[in-house]
Image 1 (cartoon, rainbow, N blue to C red):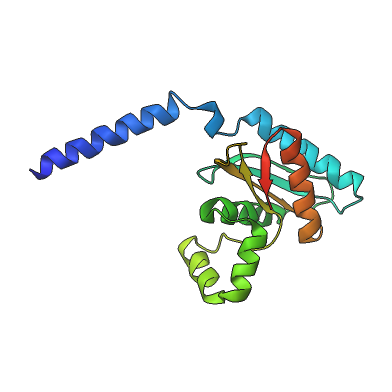
Image 2: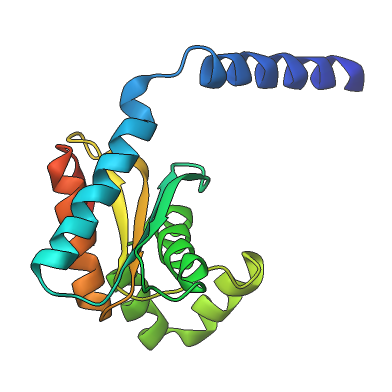
Length: 168
């Protein structure tokens, strides 16, 4: 009896894995090309706004890095900050702004979340959910280097440039 359930679970997992890896729905992932464009346009927006040097990461819907760039002059530790902003957004399904509000209202919740995710979540603006036009989460963008609100503005510019919707 237990073996049957185990076999069924393995078959389900294998079918799911094949669908994800072999038959990816391009509308439910963020391509490398789009990720690079988001980064390029976010950096351009930063220069247009005369921001400090930025670092930008794009994560897929599973929280995995699709692309990252750090401008000349940006501190080397900025990857971890950009990643933490985006990771919190995609893992919680909440923008950085919403996370910050939640942290202010329920600090214990965000402390628990950071415990669960090994301290990787940075609950401030600049972590922007990346959605298609139907509202499906495709991943998240994390920007750091200037004020959190300016970071979010740069992220939104990059996202809008590829025809997607940002939830800052």
